[in-house]
Length: 319
Image (cartoon, rainbow, N blue to C red; front, side, top):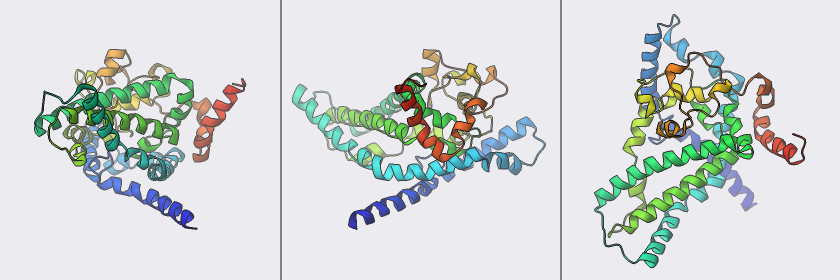
């Protein structure tokens, strides 16, 4: 009975946890970023000379009350449970893994003769984390598109036929776990690496402080990446930073846009690897996997089991 009580507590915590995102400065749907996105949305609305009232433009019933949107909302809470039960224990190991890496470096190379001040440590760690985590996310995303096994799970995110800020949480649990394992390993390595070049004792909180680069990204319309608001950046800037509309292009059901704009924040990886499409190259888009596949992913339970079904059929040679 005690085990069942613990499981129940975890489930309830998982259901409640996502609600705290609205007050979390590291989450795109924090009220602060939602307000900044709302202001940017008004700019787009004004420039487009829309005829309908602004509140109807933003809170379009066909988008927020669509069948696709309700699947997003279910994933929002379901993945909250997955994070508490499966991912939180994994994430909690990152600091200890980092310490182990630091110990290994000291045993292998001796103590470092090059030492950083705490300010240097924070600056270098932050810049390195921003660049390498963005590259890692791009490479994982690329793998999700190119490796059939992984695509079956990532396809769930692309099955959304309407976009809203909660769509970002529409991730199959398998993809969620893969993403978190990769980022924990990277963070742990960087913590151990930079600790090696610091003579003092750095607390875990030092590495967990809100990243100014992340704040700027979240502030500048990150919530609009999954929306119908076509916020574009200057043409030259979209070669370096992905605008919300560029990410919307990534969700297009047009084959010409498949496997494009796979970066997280920086556009340079798409530019380097030839997967970049800028806003000026596209006018109209439709979201989803295409009409032929929509019926296979039009419910929450279908999106959960279809990847396993498709993989099973492939292994049996029936697909």
